[in-house]
Image 1: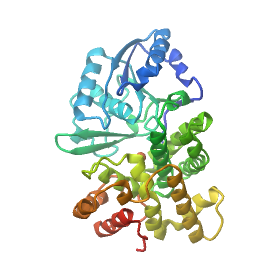
Image 2: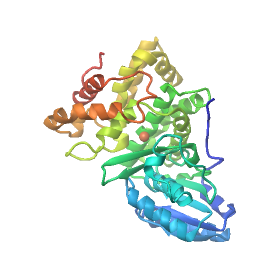
Image 3: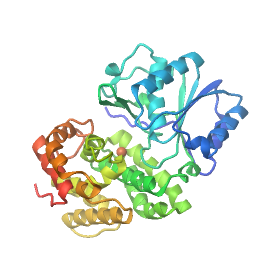
Image 4: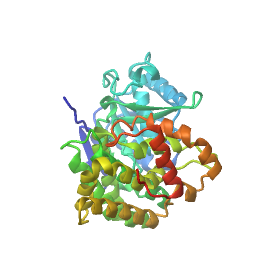
Length: 390
Ligand code: FE
């Protein structure tokens, strides 16, 4: 038996946030990131809507990027004291991911990260609270997914949590919030969304339920991302929806090795963090060429859905070329070398990174299996920009 799960309600469009006036509840915690939502007035707006609904509120602020175990535990404690029946997370991926994990430890104070690390093993939630996610970036789609990533800085481990229990009850996809993203973030998160949709479409877990969502998302990203990057408001709105569709697809179809590679290289080099979406954008064409041996027809489907013609092989080639062109338009480098990763450091670390990437939670659903040796070769291609021919 398979399962397909999405939030019960998705409110989208201009002023979608005003639905907060009508939600039922007594007490709500609002989980927030570093302060941009406050600065742009969205927090005040949410609080006034909740006030209108007669709901008492409390803020949990300053969730850091890549939220930590400590932040999650502290937030859960605040929730246990305040006893909310609504958890509302607003902002980018980080506050929403953190709030999802806080929710688990709020409802189950005695559980541990070790107990919930096994995918789809969570205890049943919604005994104490329901969850509303309001996203401000157009990429992670955490407002509709069953995933959350929490970092244990002491142990140097990332916990990728996965369970349909943490799929939000309500997602609010209000384009006004995404209109505040700077261009670079727009480019990176947009390419993250494209990667989600393409990986979901070729994943071993793809299904008739996820395929249409993935294809539509891909179509929309190709149509709207360049203008969204330039600041066009309507294109930005469409991208906010496209990334959400991609999220609906990959929450149920899972991902592949583009994400495995991005996860394990993001913080690996002393030359600086590689933003998640930027890493995905760099790796995507190389991985398509690697995976095409097993999934050529699926990639050709994608290519044809955006108007590319030819044999399957020609379609795959043209799809990769198109992604390359978009990366150029979005000022995303073509190789890790161009990104600025030091060659000696790369050579020294690539073996270990390859092993880690093969062990990543996203690898099993990749359409073509991969060994650590093959992964090392693939990563090396992405460093120098050489052809993937194995
Ligand atoms: Fe991603």
